[in-house]
Length: 447
Image 1 (cartoon, rainbow, N blue to C red):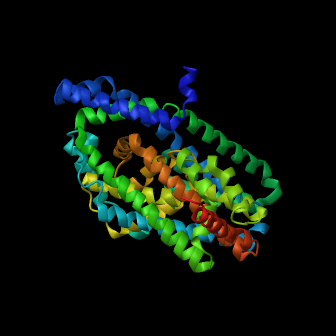
Image 2 (image 1 turned 90 degrees about the horizontal axis):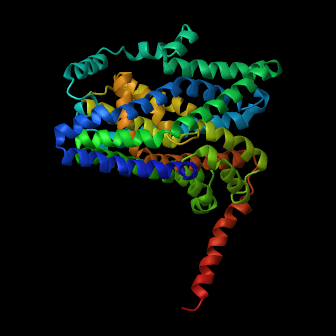
Image 3 (image 1 turned 180 degrees about the horizontal axis):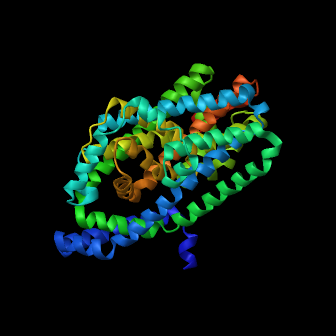
């Protein structure tokens, strides 16, 4: 079996998706819709359920440890100064725009509208009624904001209250920074715990092909090809939102607007990083390439690139923020839940915060999208059924999210370097000159 693990995980997932699709359709149209669906539910679906339980196991420790570690990564609070404030403020600014864009695109495209609640919960209409009731009984805006602050952090961790965990993790990380040298052992412990959780996540993701096969086969056997329409719409909406965010937010607002620099050389300079990001779907795996592109192609000082980009790989997840907002509305539309203005705001705030804790590894954003589903009144059980429904197709979506994340990291690093006087504009603009020379040579060469 060693040959199997030598194949890239995403390739194994794609193979599993295709096999699951073929198996599910074979059962549905070979045995009949009722018999094929029953066979899949009885003999195949358990593997998908097991994979979803493994995912649920990761959520609380993954968020807590990676978020505290990400705050610690800012280093000595004395060094935060203008660089730290500008970096974090810009990351939060672009993330807020990203999640707002995701909500707008999901509202326009309505990717979940073609589905029904039974897609995720069978014919249990009483359960769907409880979903609608829980959404209607949600507290007001002030009450839900106050509920973010935990009165007992240990209880929040034990019960999996994610927003309270995020709040406490941020406060605890800041406290470690402020404590300084005496808290260094604690900081190292959290760095180690964060790294360990990433390894555990990688272990769980090694079971993804089996889980994806089971989930896909079950969905196809019970629902047929009709479900692909909504997922295709979700993919189109996500890609379009990411393209708009890259061009308008990074290109228009930051590179050309705030920095007065040309956008084309910036994009040429990070092409290698974008290619690696799209193929690996991992901000962390792409980080060495991103740093190299920033220093050699964009003219960003080594100290700025070495501090801003690793922080960005941890807390700047604009593509993930777009996706989390979209998944929240996708689930609400599929469940027939009317989303209030208060819930829109809470989803935006939550997606902005939780994207900070999205580890730079494949599919981490999908794991965290269950938190946004809770904000629109969808219980945890149904939330993970929705996640399981999307999961077989997540690789295609994750690649674009990661490309967006890495592009954002590079744009913010360029901005901070420019503001700090640590950007070599001659190197930056050389990308445009290099392109012009190549075009001239091609034009001058004989046909």
